[in-house]
Image (cartoon, rainbow, N blue to C red; front, side):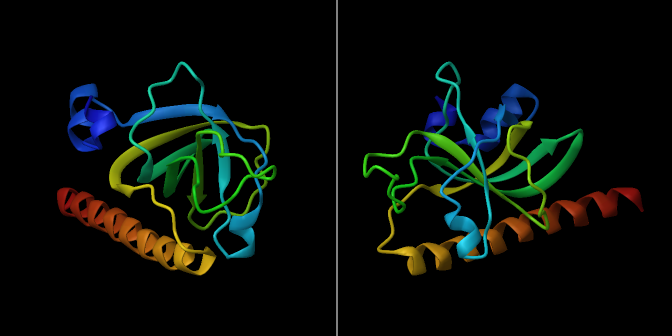
Length: 154
């Protein structure tokens, strides 16, 4: 219920760890690349509990390494599917400072904070503007965590 309500903080606290979604990276429409925000796409298993559609502060494990970024879970309503039908539910993640090709690799995405609900925008320009705001907010969140950890070390 907490995941579907967007209360990721309490859900993670009760779980004792960040909620995770695992899968294999697949090819997408490659629209993110054209707007300067490349993403990896991970289908979500039908058996997996899907949290509320939206944007999340996330980390991803690839080949044993953890990277930071921002994920969207949902149907990508602003971007039409290739055949014009509704997009399938999936997870799309922009990984900060990452430029590797990871198609067909198994990955695990960890959701740390709910940012906002998924929404449809009036075009790519409006979507890009909001994504840039989401990225800035996510980087600020990670900066805050880093500051808190540094305080603990001193």
